Image (cartoon, rainbow, N blue to C red; front, side, top):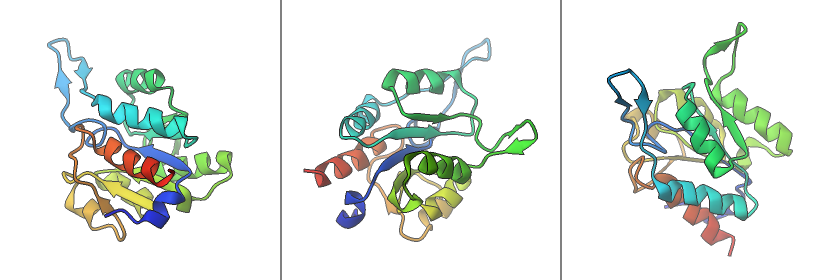
Length: 171
């Protein structure tokens, strides 16, 4: 069950990709190209959040042109690719990326909803006001204090589930 008070305080929505916006599977062509399957319900959930004035973004460790194309199609406000990778000797974690976004928006992490599913999401999930995960998340993620384990599996509308809860609270 989602805490209604916390839902009302969400001013930024962020999500991981693999296992949240996708089912966590990666499909490869014979040429070695990766393909991903996205759920249109999740995309519409983020479009509706943006229309309601809540900025949305993706934080992922992958350097994926597929994810970039999806974010551009949805006109997301923030996209951080390759998070956790070394770039020019520096390593930006998902938590650091979220803090950067919060600073730009003049909000705190307590006003962020984040959906993550694996161990590289735990630091950020532990810091935000509304941590969420799909039911197929890793056990370590489900053990994060205060996390909302959603009913819908990753890649099948898990983001839409929490987006709908946030949008309902605004009415």
